[in-house]
Image (cartoon, rainbow, N blue to C red; front, side, top):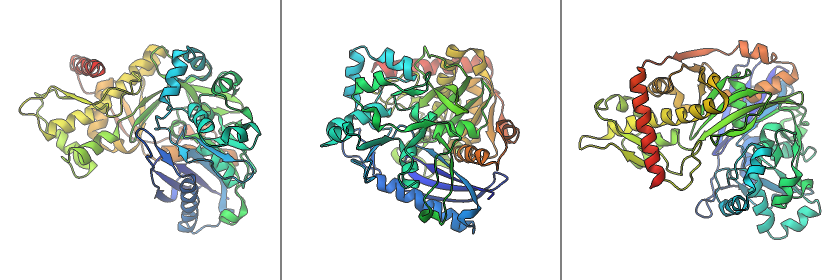
Length: 494
């Protein structure tokens, strides 16, 4: 048993990746599923789609690799975080579609709680802000809205879970109702300092605690998959939310190490060690991972629009036909122009947390064209990352100025990574293995199964593909960033 099956359940698709004993990818499979938008600002998934695509892709990689289930030492799960499901304890039937992390339907609930003065208490306990992004208010909405849900929940007949918990329940045939500390830390109802579900916040949101899953380490025994799924029972040995799994996959095991993942959005995490750091700059305090009952904490910043700005160039402006064209187009931009794009298409994330502002472009001239727009779009990712790192530095000190490890689709653009290094004034390291999220989940399961090395050994095996060093002079860097800050300030006031 030398293979590890990583399940990567994302926002738009489910993937399965089979890793061999050397942590090399043996086979992959991916299936997209339907996004549901029943009202403005609402985003839902059909739980049946989540489950069917996970099973189908897992079976597909086993078949592609021409192995048997008996060859698999363990399963690791990583998942879209904060997405909320509630299902019947007896039948396993969900009471509603999954409410996705992007969903904003509980904005009014969050506003009322803030107005009542509850946010400081919630932030102190959970490290999070009162925002619809997180699971707690989504769960409260389901209990208050779905007919009969509250009565069933109070009778102990309903279970709550994030996607990982739902998958564990389904994989084990309803034998295990559990989650890991990283996913629990994103629910708004888990005390990250005390390591348990918080009774005060559950009371505030009117959530019966009987619904909540058991919280375990990231590398732990989460039960075995039912034999009828893959031909034999396979132990589930690793679970982590997607951004934490990427942090693990990047081997950011020492305080001060940072990673940033560039997908549709961008998520940057800074390892702060065994002590949670309360942010004064509206970053999130969260759990990076938990081993042997000891959490390691992180500061996290979220950018809503990263790779999505390139999609906008393609689908909105139609100035490119595929993402790869953005880099050569940006190269043609007039260096004398200083066009700044603030991509607040759905508001701005950390450290601003303004959901109401919208995108803006500054510095246009009669000569501004597609090349200048492409350059401004790619530069916006670097500027936003610097915003996060500046906030981290203010919260935690100068160690946040170290090397930034990057992953995700946008990192394929050398132009973007060089500008990122230039504007943050620090080295940017791109690894050989860009499948860091799946790699993190696989390592958790493989280390638990005894197939992979411990954290120290795994960290030594991390391999650099390319380092980008800052080449921009300090005066230019400061002037460009000051221009960005002025543009953001103007956008926030519109």
